[in-house]
Amino acid sequence: MYGYIDGFLFYLQAEKNASPHTVRNYQRDLFDGVSFFARLLNRDDYKLHPAEITVALFRQYLGEMRAQNKAGATILRRLSSWRSFYRYICREGVVTENPLRRLGSPKREKKLPGLLAEEEISRLMEAPNRDNVLGLRDRAVLETLYGAGLRVAELVAIDIAAVDFKRAAVKVTGKGNRERIAPLGEYALNSLHAYIRRARPLLMAKHPGRVDALFLNNRGERLTDRGVRWLIKRYAALTGLEPGTSPHTFRHSYATHMLDHGADLRVVQELLGHVRLSTTQIYTHLSRERIRKVYEQTHPRR
Image (tube, rainbow, N blue to C red; front, side):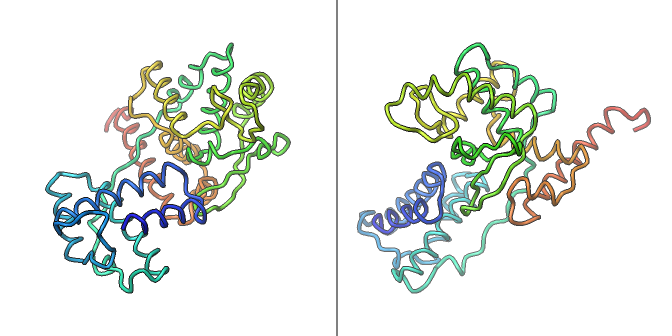
């Protein structure tokens, strides 16, 4: 079983261009299932074969997760990981049948994403100390993340050659290895210019070889998604924002603020790099919630 999982994870990296964070999530989900199936079958986990896992075993796995009070999103993600794995090994001829094809999925919980108010975004942007190298970098990271509505994996994958100051845009590679051009506003461009001119050369000097990455860490290497999460958590704490503030909070905020200011939903879909409009439509629900809240707070005869 583990050999097939290793092959699948390599496929995700090499052919699907999955981020290290995504690959780690798949590995964790699959290993969790392997441990459960081995325990249920009273077998050594390394001796299991994918053909032994039946739809009945997957139903028991679902029941086990529910009994452990796992969040609905966690259950759905694990099932999705296993579905992807079985699609892969079916194509590879390892098994002839995908047991998950006959297994229904639990209903997805409709949960509106968290977001920051525009004033909170401004406060967060002012938090980095622009008198030092890392402060300049952090301000550029925050401005670019919000200014272009990027996923964190897209942000850290940007090479310096992808930034086009003349066109006020950056080329990013999103899910499924799809490229798009993301516009950048004045704040993001100014922060990037200051970082590239005053900070990035000093960070590059700490690394012996050539590094093409736009954003570098303190060792002159490509900044990781974990590094971005850490710096956002740090500045959120400094500015008194919610401790759960994450890179994706910036993306949610970007989309919602765009719609609040009159942007067309299909334009926002293109800017976010969503394949389906339905993925973007959650932000219309979010905006309606905000409209209702403002109404209740401000209307004299609500």
